[in-house]
Image (cartoon, rainbow, N blue to C red; front, top):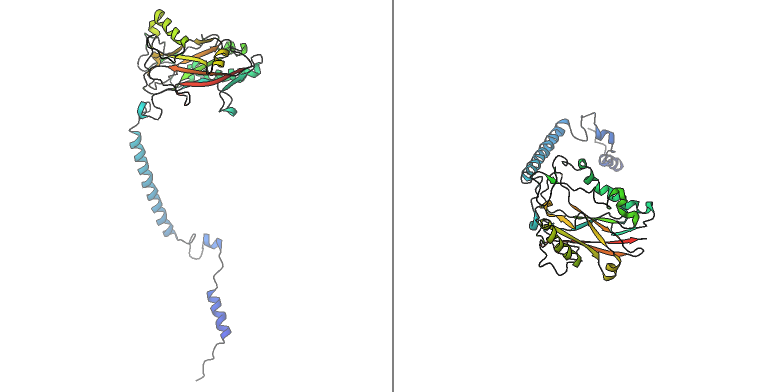
Length: 322
């Protein structure tokens, strides 16, 4: 019986090396292996189980989200905010806004600056007012507005479901046809009180006990209305004057259209379909040219507070007419 021939150490080492050497990675074979029919290392049965699991998982997840959203929307009314007045972020003190605004590339500015003798120079301001006032001129531009417009007055508040008209066509010289008087270096600025759902103004509807800080011209105006048109006393009054003594000297005469305030029959705001906020056109008749005039406009009611720093109940802008 012959003895087995021993393997040489070099032969054994080469064999072990071949066993340890990993097979080269083949992407095409990984994506689809024709030998065992696997796709990315898994057969059809494995992929089917994974697919069923994820379909069931995301299906249940989507159903839970849909149920939560449905339950949430049942607590909301499309026209009535869930949180109002003191419970809301807006609070109970409306702010005051003005139009026209400076160009969008200078959004932080409040300066209205133009040369009255050049149409191209004041064109931005009149075009901006045209755009802002378009919804007041064409009822169809406001969703739901048209059939429900009511010709309101102090003794004719709007019936339920109807909204008051704001007729700006007769506010001459603050009309489009008159370039809002910009070409005469006597610009018109439009004021608008911010909307707060359910807010009811407490009017200064008597000339007695008016605030000390109220301008004398407004006090005189309220006293005159009290004598001649007492039905118009339920108004949120408006005043615009120079912020500083020098501004007060340069601002000149100021006129308010159609009256000096926001009529009370527009309130409370209840998000009625087609509602448009009332406006006041402030016509600066003879402002001094070539100098910046700081203007502060305020809305006056017993439940409107004023804070110059936070611009509560008031608005600031500047006029510069070359």
